[in-house]
Length: 131
Image (cartoon, rainbow, N blue to C red):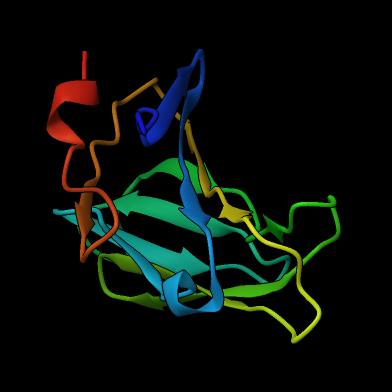
């Protein structure tokens, strides 16, 4: 079956979608932001800084979320390691598949672009989706 483009552009950023059809597919999603520093904020969002921890803020990532097929929330969280953001999901035994996890990255401060590199087994076809 055809797979949709893994990210959707918008006026202020983009989203990266991971759709999981079973518990075996509920593996972490890692997104690398080369040359950026990611900072976890108390509200669950992530601040993206140019360069290091003292760099200018250039974007944000909304708090982690994931939903199951019937629309119920699925436990999820972000972890940050330097320039890499990882979203983990924790589906329960009664979770209805498919699940979707969809980090939203928003541009900020001067409209600088924030180009991600997606790692792991998530999106081998990402390159054709960039415009």
